[in-house]
Amino acid sequence: MKRIFLSIAAACVIFNAAAQQTFFSGGGHVVLKDKAQKTFLLLPVQENKDGANIQIISDGKVEQSLNVKLAVDKIDYFVPLSIEKFSGKNLVFDIEFWGGEKQTADVKNYLCWKEIHQSNDFDTQNKEHFRPEFHHTPLYGWMNDPNGMFYFDGKYHLYYQWNPYGSQWENMTWGHSVSNDLVNWSLEQPAILPDGLGTIFSGSCVVDKNNSAGFGKNAVIAFYTSAGRNQTQSMAYSTDGGKTFSKYEGNPVLTDENRDFRDPKVFFNESINRWNMILAVGQEMKIYSSLDLKNWNYESSFGQGFGCHDGVWECPDLMKIGDKWLLICNINPGGIFGGSATQYFIGDFDGKKFVTTQKDTKWLDYGKDHYATVTFSNAPDNRKIALAWMSNWQYGNEVPTKQFRSANSVPRDLFIFEADGEKFCGSKPSDELLKLRQKVIKTPSETCEILATLKGDAKITLSNTKNENVTITYNAKTKVLTFNRKQSGEVSFSKDFAAETSVKVPGGSKTLRIFVDKCSIEVFDGEGKAVMTNLVFPSEYYSLIATTGCKTIIYQLQK
Image: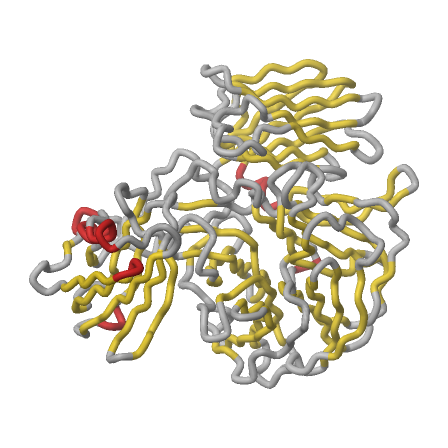
């Protein structure tokens, strides 16, 4: 991944003590004054503290507001706050601490006042043990839902829920990465920043090929949830291929009385020659239509009496595959193994109403760590390429990484198949992953793909010299594939992490494809009929493999 900052942390220069002024008052309120002299203000973060709100004031005007967990007595890491545009100006940082961090006497002694400093550089070497090799990750900070994914002019664009000011959820902004091949990602500048309507929650992008919205032929139109006093839907447009966006002056474009009203997915429906939007609203999906992408008509709702309702419905997607329609519905909590997960429905859609005869709940992935799944708009050859957030809301904020948190799943091509008299959605690893294969190796490496040919009942154990292990078993009679990570390594950060997941493979399984990448293992049925995605945090990588009932080939994977 291309780095956007130089890694010369040692060159940081501490605030000039003579120029800096710090004022403390009651209720945990602090005012810090200084002149902007360098590119960044580096903020020390301590994750187990309540945090504070910082308002950046220039010439009496609030220029930016952000939330950050400033260090009290320990520094976990630094985050960069860009002040380059204020160069030479006197700035006021108005800081208010939350929760218990309010006693004036204590606030004066916080470590952060000694360690906040300006710098022209920010260290992005990211030497963290668990940073994946071939999965997309943010350069630093927190990441969750993939957003606004589209393909245009030979490039895949991936936006994502991003916190630039800490490695836990907060300050939602659209980060941005670009790839030619779904494997190698270059990091771009943030695409859509919070504004007066709120922070920037999840959404989608479309390529407006026929200038429906009037922003120009092939303008990229982003739809997202503005999360302020309420959740409303807004739009922004890009005339440079998705690199930079201008917000539509008529925002918000859609409102609702429901508090949970978010995550717009927009697509052009050729069968009705109109645009459709599907939105998550409480525990159902609402469907809208439009001719100009600005004015939206409500058409119908879907959800009552279908699927799992043990949590809030989120991040929908709706697409035609063959002669059927697939509706993706992410839910949190309520996942089959606890926490967040992705369910789906197969049915028919006439541009106004989605109808399904599916009675049971079907899950797109049967692991613990596959959520907020959505597909790329405008993908070549009508492919339905999906990415997910590879974590779980039960413990996403606590997994044992620091400078960054979370990765995306490997890209998967979705398809519909029939087995045992039912229709299912399958997930095959995208063909682009084949180029990662370097050579056949005898034992597992940190980044590898294991191909297993099953002879019947089978068991695969991956382990290390610390007696940490994961086991993958297949029961040929019941057709059940199981993944056990209870002894996989570090599991103590959450009572919900040490778990076993399983899936009955429709029609049974003959082969497996297992992708291992430092902190994750994704197990695919060889034909894509089932998949399990699970995080693991071993103290050293799994260098040993033991098998029964199968034959394996191991490929070293490298970008």
